Image 1: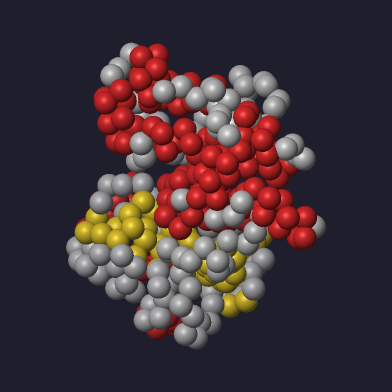
Image 2: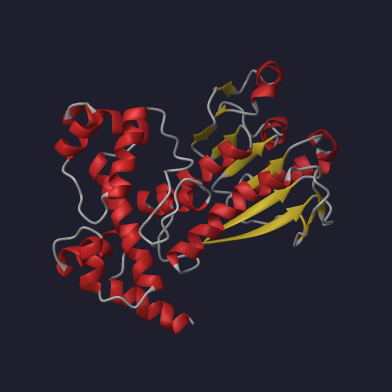
Length: 323
């Protein structure tokens, strides 16, 4: 799902009856959040059901759809979402449609039980995949031609599978990261996190890192220190000393846990905080640079443009024209 930043990435969603509401939200809400944070449409989506009727979720809240799934030669990624009783919808007609559309789609994704439907249609043959942990052994026995992997989500070329709602949220963050960078994925992840003990109200105060899970307490401590020192960034050596490890070891821990170097995460925190000030206030850019830990307006502008592909003034001008 890599894309050119200047165009909108469209996604089609085929939602089967009895799908959990949270599963649908796990796909759509990160895309909506990315659009909101970027201040532009990076993603769009259309929902379909097998028969064109609204999807009655397990919570009893219906999801309206654009119509029945009747693909032609669409190339957009297709996400197949299902939670319970997927076999009731797996008609020969629907499986034929999936087989036909797979010839043109750049990506086919089985979300939770949607992976069963893809496998049943032979669309996961010779791919690596995952599914919900409760169904893992049954899935592996039923489809030996699929290489099963005990992961939260699996991206194997043109096929994607997930093991549940929260793993799907993780997947969407990863797709956003690949398309638009770590800073945006980080900021999207933080929209879904609430921490009661944090009571400061200023815009630079940000919550812990959310769904990019921190499994090492020392990395977690370093991340909290970064959040608390946005205005006056610490050196790597000072960060490492505060959490009780060497600078080299903290770098290694960070890469293993977060997938990026400490300085990349630190810079993403500072730029995201600065971007909120650019969008939500009328502060001078020099002042925003100072409270975001940049030595000068020029260094701030260079970093901002490198991350967001526009200058701070261009962001404000674009949003002013939009409004």
